[in-house]
Length: 468
Image 1 (cartoon, one colour):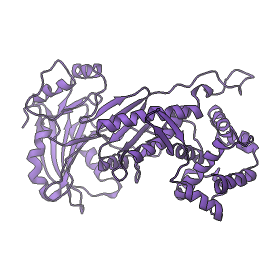
Image 2 (image 1 turned 45 degrees about the vertical axis):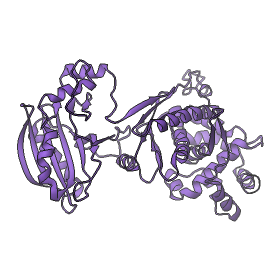
Image 3 (image 1 turned 120 degrees about the vertical axis):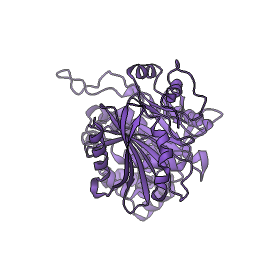
Image 4 (image 1 turned 90 degrees about the vertical axis):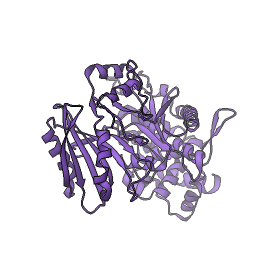
């Protein structure tokens, strides 16, 4: 068992004034935001936890919030995965209240959770805790949980594994629990002065505009960073920052005049996982499934991994798509909702980009993944009429994703490459109006609404079938 204050030495990774820890190669977890630190199980891998979402109106208030997670590199003897999740227990200062809030959270939505064994523990000689062996009925999993309180804040350290071996694992899990510390104000201040620490096992590669956080190989992170910066220049050619002012000027009589305010980009976050299962776990906890990468506007981060089936090339092309969503989100802000056909269509436009390492330049060509689908649909009439597609909601678009992604891409490609004067610049004009008014219907009426949509439909189909 790690001696009670031995962890303090491990904080040297964040507090340079403290001596280094020679007894273990495991990296301590130090969390200044929540004021805690402890030594996780040796060789377990730290998994990023979901970031706090910006839009939570649709979510019920939760009694607990996951703040950290680890996963064992191998399952237990019965092949059950072994994880450690750490939760802040909200609005529960005293230990008894924290235990009740934790158990209530496990029984929400009609779930079953029985406590088979419990014991009182004393951590660091002063913090009372409760050690529980829990059984979520009919799942085969067992929960070993330590709930700790200092009288002001409470946390739960939740170990999962197979129920059959859970009780035998309790002494080993207790070793981790007994390293748990509540940080002092001085320790927190020193940690914050050192800057925001990365999670154990994670690194960061900083480019001019991106923070590439990664636990994959460094070479892939560097490559992604290079490509992100290069394609960002392409995004800006289409939607230049200087041409997008702020909102409408509010001077009386000049309300519709564009603002002289310039758009500036905040640093953008990209998170790269080294393993698909880790990515899937993180994505699922953020409500995403079945993707190789995604951009979350609620958390303002682009998340991906290096795919195994087709390797680096496919992963980076998917990044081109998702990074376009990220750029548009940064350009327009949270209040503006870009129509789904254009948001996905422009993202697919850049998916087809090819980067030349020798010149450092992009060429944006045909999206070979989508072209056959839309050609066939345009020929046999199974495409979605443009007048209808332009009004699609996100749910409608995704319900027929294969066709709609192909169609959205082909419309964007047609409008950007056409030599027909009546269509040139219409997308950029629409986007400028959208940012100015924050009203998609009004912006559409002032731009696309002035076109003959039926004629646009015919011209686009002719282009797809005969000239693309």
